Length: 245
Image (cartoon, rainbow, N blue to C red; front, top):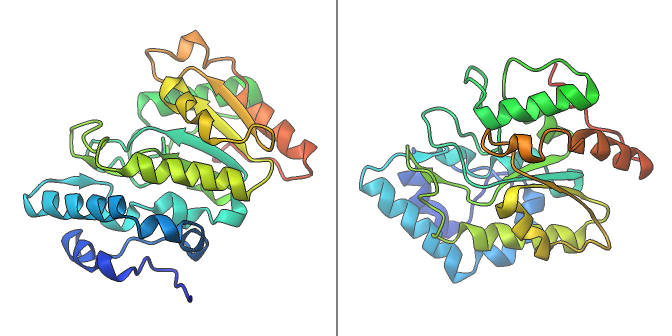
């Protein structure tokens, strides 16, 4: 069955029209891996929910074309590292479909600032001014949020619409189809996804969340970014340039 770069499932037509008349992009490798999930009833329910909310005038982040940005920026074959977030930022202009990341021109949120501090401490690289993590994604860091959409200014508002069933399947399928991935699981929510990962085949690095409420209780000093590069090099793979410079 042929696939194209554009996410073109026919039953997504109405959602395309509702979400700013743009088509979400999804690399064809993910269409192949996740084709079964897109056809399940729960996924139709997600689409219907988003369509209904848009018709009510609700503002939903990220913009429609960026809902699957992580999947479009990091093809399946390129995935080396997985950083799992919870749901998108809910402030104007912040979310662009990559966990913990914000577009150019948007001030890095507190958790991202703490991520940069940890990288600076463990690797000695300068703390970036901007918070756009696309350069990581293009190197094989899959920046996955467990929930892919959110209502403006309402955190966790789309937590129960079915996204977690979809992203749990994503984690499970990555675990099944790939070898030697490095999963960074920060906080209890992310650690709860460990059950979908075959730890015989993959590496799991876990700690507290980089949020200001918990970063000092185990995130700072976890050395995950240094350990990730050491693991990649031990497997004969290129390390990640975490510097963003």
